Image 1: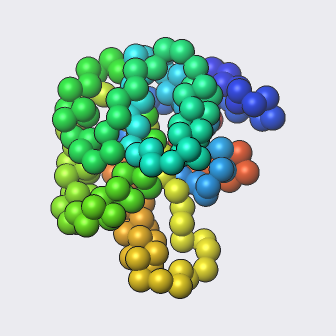
Image 2: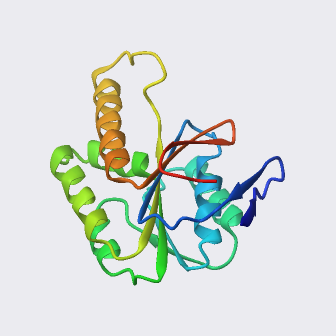
Length: 190
């Protein structure tokens, strides 16, 4: 059994690493999902790759990125890929584990760039299927709130829901994190 402890010190999880090929970690904003996903990756003992999907357009986002880098600590190779994850996933060695943080930012990038979302999602899913490394992907659950008041927000919410459904269907392990607490929705995490 491998003990994994949250760096903030407010909760401890006991995790048996079952090494699923694809783990999907879902949760609301500031739910603890990224910290949980990072701990899964670190506990694997494999070479760690952080695939960053965000784009930094302002100081607030830069501060958030810096907090995430500090939170992760040493031992990570960071690759910035706001759009095309396929080439990076294709070149990962089998003895590595990749954390994609996050699918929500990746989708937002494509939505704002007016990409074909169905094509982008299909390409992502195919890249995940072909990846020889273990992958942990983080995403936001956005369907628990009210119906947004504008068309772009409604389009995003629908696209995020479809993406989350597709990722969960592909994943061997699906964990929802709420208030820092993991709940296994699919697979096994003891």
